[in-house]
Image 1 (tube, helix red, strand yellow):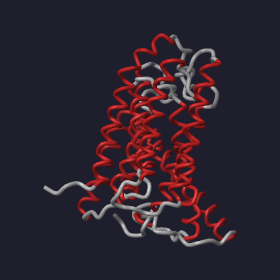
Image 2 (image 1 turned 30 degrees about the vertical axis):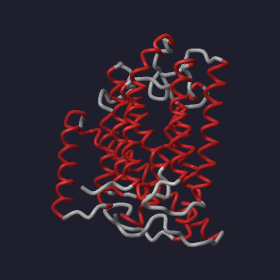
Image 3 (image 1 turned 60 degrees about the vertical axis):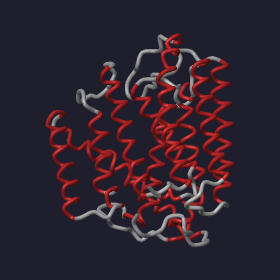
Length: 344
């Protein structure tokens, strides 16, 4: 039996840690019941998990710990930029990032138990949702040279434009992750639990910067797919509570599920070398699933499949245009070795 390399071992232990921390949130969540009742859910734009009236200590603890975590991640992102690739080894920076994120996850669990409120008490819900959408757009743009943007088609993005996006993507993504993490109290509802687990995986991706894990196509596609688990889970949870807020009736979760699966079928799978029959089977399976789901929801709502792909592809095109403009206005170095052009 071949001994696993240090990166694989560290990665396996980190994934186990993500499971344990998610379970810890679920185990400690009943202690938050003392903060109930919360305000009634007022529809899709309403964030349910916040106190009816904010408290001073809730504000200080949530924003103080968020800023400490955020500044720590930005410092790490800056240091990662100058570290260079070490594909098969875990550096001191990687270990530090894992420890920093683990410590702040535990602090957030404690902060929720003591004061409940996260950042959601003070900022609109769309800010958290929007930050993650932009993160997914950055992933689509950055991976396009390796797998194409749609159906394997590889746009001719300028190397200087790609280099510009890569130069700041770590700062933006670390903000999106940290902000979204501290947005929520550590509640144990299934929707939030799936979100926290997904967040821990994304923080793992950040922590393994400059290793082969950070660039592994299978891992990156999994991260893209799992957002399609969290979105439907939240929608189903709201539906079970009678607060789905969907004018078309129950089943808005189908929009999320079909939309994010569309992204895998039309983009994600092209990161892998698959036989033609395998690709055909993926398309056929997706088509059958969509027909089955909308036979229940109603074929008059079939247009909902396009919502998420339109947002993500549209955002990617917009980012490409901005990056191309910046590259022309401020010529700089060509793209480095961060994301090779060939498929994984």
